[in-house]
Length: 107
Image (spheres, rainbow, N blue to C red):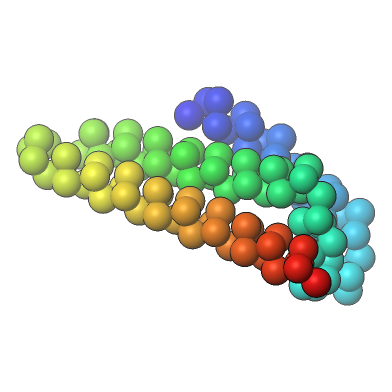
């Protein structure tokens, strides 16, 4: 959790700096995202931020479940749900990034 927290600190602060502070708010539309995601750096940056956030949340929820779910069967069910949810959300997020990148590269 410390590792993902440290990674998120760097990724989120960099995102805030480059996207929200150095760019005019009126310029941050779909075209801005398309231009950003034409660079492998920003695809990797946003994908890493997505993955780190989901992993950080899953690790935190796992700790909570292990603390409060006393029965092993209930604990396994909750952990399975959390892992499946995070995997599905990561897949959906990466699909969205990939679909946007592919749609913009066809143009």
